[in-house]
Image: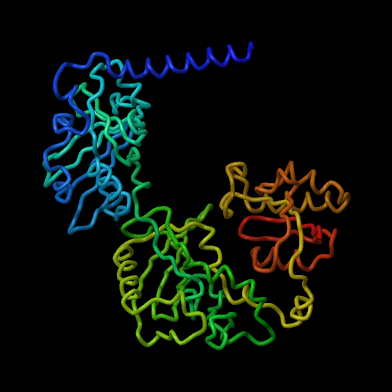
Length: 489
């Protein structure tokens, strides 16, 4: 009985709170048609949206989004939206369309409170105030503003629970609620860039060549082709004498390099302090040719930049291969090449390290001494392992925890830990938890089980060569740092 009374009290309090919130939004409303008109009526939109606003959206040429610390400016140039704050680079078309569609599909616009004291509760405070959550959005035609409105919190209509947004015109205390699917736009330029450069299904690739343009002459060029044109395994052209290709698993990352390739930053021209320039050329069975000139800056950490070109080559087209469902028609490939060229022409892109690492592979890294082939043929399909990673500033995916540690300092620390692990292997997990810079540190360095091709080649080769329970005799260097490896199963 006591529990029933408690539940009843809670229910009543909740109901009163809902009614109170509704009353707050209704109080201080001016007795005018704009404030009291029926939902969805023309008078309910007075002072907010211009007449025939949906049709006028097609004439919008400028968009501005202001927050407390940043301002985003977009301009439509020859039918293409560009970012004025991103050196004029392309804006993500889908984000622009979503924003304009949100305005264009507004319905049942209903006037709410004009009480200025309630603006903050609706997320409609001054967008210039530090920490403000509101956004000032201006849509313009040929330099003339068509609409300037402050967007606030999202909410749901009381009548049918439909999603909508609160807003108020600039210079007015009157607030409105409109039913529409719209998320509050952020004024960060980085969020509005069209960052997807290429998305090539690995099964489309027929040929991949990697070679230095200048820099380290010891990096030999390598060319990979599909074995017998079957879209199956890769093979290396012109393998050096006394060496053999590593297992196919080592080529997996190369085949995925152009799948989901995006960038971190863009500039109109690459920096002047570039070195170790490498040319990567990829061709597909359906006739697409991609050329990526990859460079890096000097110093630590190194930053990688790419310049991309694309074109359709009829002579490269060969769709008479097994499993051709991922291949594209001539028209689709021509359109794809044109899109890539349109986005990339005249630009240099900063590329993420995890994509760059496999693309910088050289012939020595793709091959091994022929004598090692028999040993790898006996490797199991999967193994289990744990590791301790000691990273350094500039290593791939290095966290802030690494600080300014140099590569030499990291190597010395790894060698010291290896000596301690060898002295007492039972403390491996302890050292991994306290010393490792890898994401598996909380699990004692445990990586679970993995097959060939899932780890970078140096790590994989060392781990698969161990016996269960054995610790690698030496540290293993990868682009992520120095590893101490123990096979677990």
